[in-house]
Length: 450
Image (cartoon, rainbow, N blue to C red; front, side, top):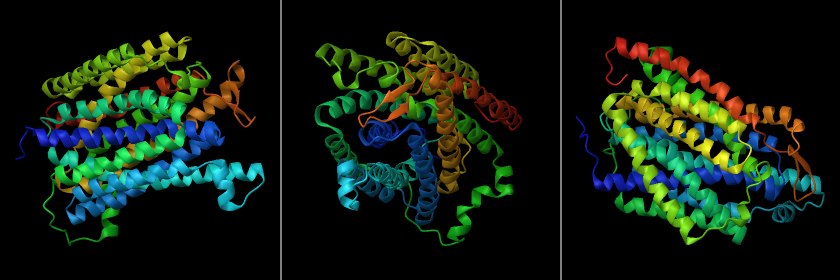
């Protein structure tokens, strides 16, 4: 039986790889969108297309490389080398611009330059995502499942659940200020170096969770479809119910998240380029971050102690109420207050749902199931969520005074509107359906904590 205690060295690697990975994903989820929208001149429809294609790429990468990681019985090489290459792929974005694309392809027509520039951004985002998903979604998540047990997963997931929110806050301030001061190219270079350094550090500090004994039996292609077999689904019904709940949750998030910072900038009037960052503001932010980590960590401990079933429905309710309140917020102060509710519900649901998925994942096939996990956690949400959000924007933006924006190239594009939060709240109700059946089935099987 694995030890329920997590060593200091392991915590260090969880924090380093977990947080830096989320910083990279936060920039990809937020500033790649604003980069495409503001710097290149794309539209919300282009963003929706980019999100969907990168989601498909992430799933393909996780299926292929998660399976390979299992067969080679190794995690470390995929993690460390993966992060190094991931950093280099981020640096490439420093050299993408309309002018450079025009020179590269010998284009003079502005319409063709725009189309080619948008295509280059999307293609490179897919390349970056393939490498990032190999190292983070496949290797890192499999490694986390390897090194944890049900008795400590709430604690581990509590820390991991705080990283997306902390990364978002850090990226919003630091990357936003960096873009205003030095431009996108310098910021992409800085981020890429940071991600690569993380992989280099891990090469010396991370202990592989596997023994490095390659598995010879079974065919590689057959293993790729293992998780789709009816017998496997039936045998692991609790896992698939948990994954379905995760999918509904992430679809709701993807209805508004890709457009959140464009909404803040162009609808709410938040000026990312002129942030007044004083020592006092930094001090308050540090205290707030420390308190936030402490609260999330304690919530994870409580989930471990009292069981996930005690928190799941209140978390769904908090998330929905927060989204409804956010859709009604007219000023930045009110918006900030309501977003706290959204993030609180989001954090709790991340802890509970992700821990549940790990609990029900067969230990000897962790890598095999990472691809299945990515279908529910990434592909379906990112293929379904952003188009739903874009449809809401195109339907309701004409009804708002601030619903249309003329970008730096003089092109009229729709701006995200408050209805995206209301649409996400309505969709979030679906999370409760698979949770109801999961709890019923888990109790019938006497699963602890459900």
